[in-house]
Image (cartoon, rainbow, N blue to C red; front, side, top):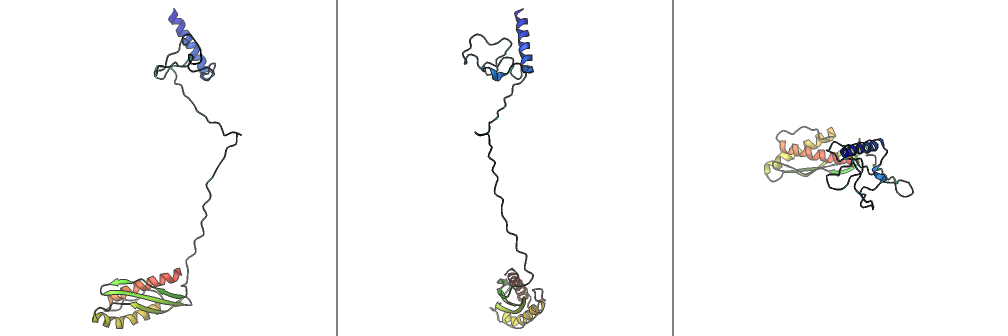
Length: 194
């Protein structure tokens, strides 16, 4: 008989908790800590940790409802919330590429080829290449000096005519021609960046 009354009371408390008639926040979680005396309300089952559970709740895993806790934080005093945003990055518009070469003298890269270095510079006037000067060329061997005497003036003439590094290789001066073209292209690139 006592067991039947305890079960009925526990069911009433459980149904009352689900219906919202009893809120665990309306009374202390630990009746002994709040000064209450006497046994825990009938129908309650202690949680697995050993502490008392609020009336009408059962720990998860024993067939009863699971209890959940929701934590909310109040806004700062005054009720206003401060919103901050990152500053917008400022980017300068990129400069459009030059369509003509800038006037001046522009040196090309020193390019190592089979028998030495080749390096040229260009003189630009009115947006056009007006001169190509050889700053360095293979000269350690007499054969290289002989080849360059004929190859370098031909390469200069072609560069002035083409206004670019897209020039033909001089026969018999393959290495010098390839270094000349690479150095010339670097000088032209610098004139466009100028």
